Image 1 (cartoon, rainbow, N blue to C red):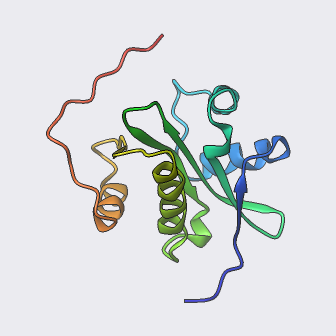
Image 2: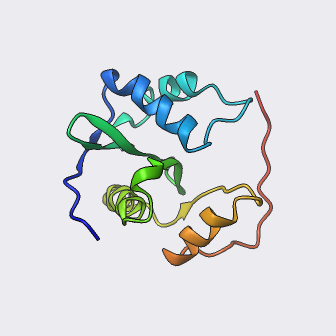
Amino acid sequence: MQKINLLLRPYQEQDEAQVINLWYRCNLVVPWNDPKKDIDLKLQVQPELFLVGLIEDEVIATIMAGYEGHRGWLNYLAVAPEYQRQGIGKYMVEQATIKLKLLNCPKINIQIRNSNTDVIQFYEHLKFKIDDVISMGKRL
């Protein structure tokens, strides 16, 4: 594995276009989610938990974490396709986990589409387990 000089920092306004482009490249954007609106909403709540990974000035990874006092959540984990399978996704999850632990978060939840088997396997490799629950939602 080649050594990658990844800079990890909180999202900044000038990252927006690169972040949205990355999310599209990683197939994270679905018709019912507006990525710009999702960024704007995240910046209103715990913006310090929205992390980007950069190589030089290029955003090549993202993760959005959150903690509402009961459970932590991870969203928008993305790694540019040309940098996948090099440990960057694992590193992003580890760094978000450290930040959540510092907030005394007892458990992290994630939601993955059933059809996304590669991502399910990725998280299983990181010791995430399938909870015996039904995830429900209501669009507002």
